[in-house]
Length: 138
Length: 138
DNA sequence: TTATATCGGACTAATTAAGTCGTATATATG
DNA sequence: CATATATACGACTTAATTAGTCCGATATAA
Ligand code: SF4
Ligand code: SF4
Image (cartoon, rainbow over all chains, first blue to last red; front, side, top):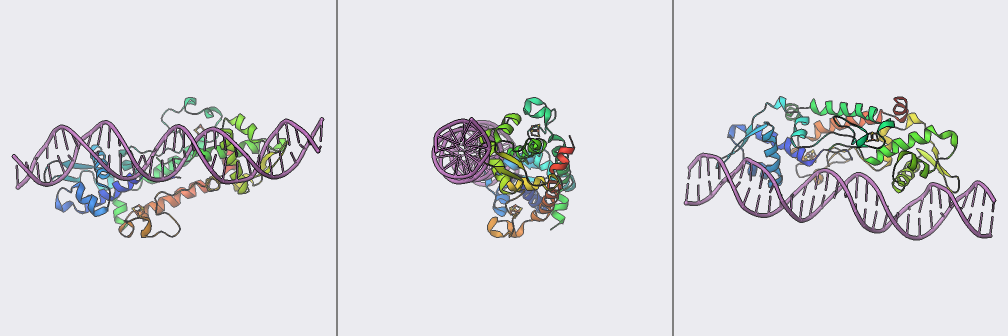
C-alpha cells in the first residue's frame, strides 16, 4: 500500500487554515483542531514539528498560537513530509550510502536501478507541488 | 513512509528468476527460495497469487513448479502490485466512489484534487515499467 | 495570580506487513 | 500402487509502523 501518512494530510490542511485565517493573528491549536476535526494532541505534535522546520512560527501563552513563517510557494509537500519525519523510500536500500548490509540480495539486485528512477520521479512530483498550488486549486 | 511491500519486491525477483531459468522447465518454490533467499512459505503464497493472475503457471506433483505464462512485456509493476492485493492509494478517499462517508473533511477538502493528480502520475510510472525493462536494465 | 497556550517526551492502541504452520491435494516415478 | 515431492490454501503469530492519548513543564497576556 503506497499511501501518505495521515499526519501529512493534517499538516497540509492545518497550514491552509493558518494561512487563510492569518488576519486573526495567532491561531491556536484548539481552533484548528475544532474546525478541521483533527485530534488535538496529534495536531499539537504536528504543528510543533512544522514550527521546528520554520514553516510556521509560534507564540506561547494566552492568545498565543501559530502563524505562517514560510511563504506558501516555498512549502512543498516534500518539505512537509520531511518535517514530519516521513520518507519517500520505496525499498530499504534507497538510502544515502546503500550497501550489502541493508539487503542480502544487494549485489545481484536488478531492482534498485529501475525502482530508484521511479522514486526520483515520485520525489519530483511531491516537491513540485506546493501549498500555494494546493490552495489555488480549490 | 511511501514504500512498496516486500512481497512486491519478492515477486519481481521471482518472476525474473523463473524467466531466466525457463530452459529448465518448471522451477520449484524451493529452488527460488534458496537462490534468492526469500522465506519459503511467504514466497509460496506470492507465487500462488501470481498464478491466479495468470502471470505464471503451475504444475503440481513431483518435478512440478512454476513457469512463465504472460510475456514479460505484459507484466508491469502495477500488475504485480494488484496481484498481491496491494494498492497505490495515497489517501483513504482515493477509491472508486469516494464520498463523505470515508472522511469527515470530504466536502471541504482541498487535497483530493492535487493528491489525486499525483497518484495518477505515480500509477503511470508503475504501469509503464514492465518486467522486460527491469530485466534489460541489468 | 490565573487562565490559556505551546513544549515535549512517554505511553497505548490500532492497523498493516511479514513470516509461519498445518493439512489437503496432485503427480511423476520406482 | 506406494512414496516422495511439489503446489493449494487458510489460519495463525509476530514484528513494525502509524495513529492517537496522556501528563507534567514552561511561557505569557490580562
Ligand atoms: S532486493 Fe534489491 S531493491 Fe530490494 S532492498 Fe535488496 S537491493 Fe534494494
Ligand atoms: S482529508 Fe481530503 S484527501 Fe484526506 S481522506 Fe479526507 S477527503 Fe481525502
